[in-house]
Image 1 (cartoon, helix red, strand yellow):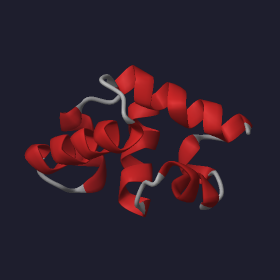
Image 2: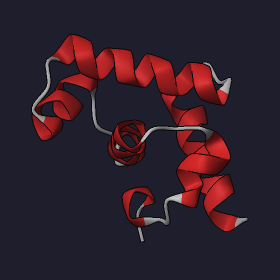
Image 3: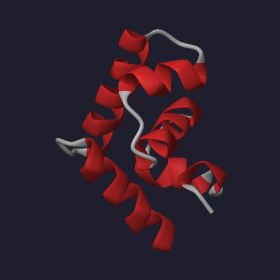
Image 4: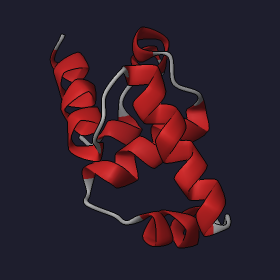
Length: 76
């Protein structure tokens, strides 16, 4: 299963909104901000803001690290 199909408690555990979980799931598949914007029908700056918010909430500095945190929490 991918991150987007995980139970809602993943968001509760790592403090992400439903939209941020959608963005994180797309990050996990290697999508760029432009790809994320297109997939979610938002502007690229909006997608970038979501990514920045995810990194801040998770306390990480890279997209890869954010995905790693999500994967660790999936296994708990």
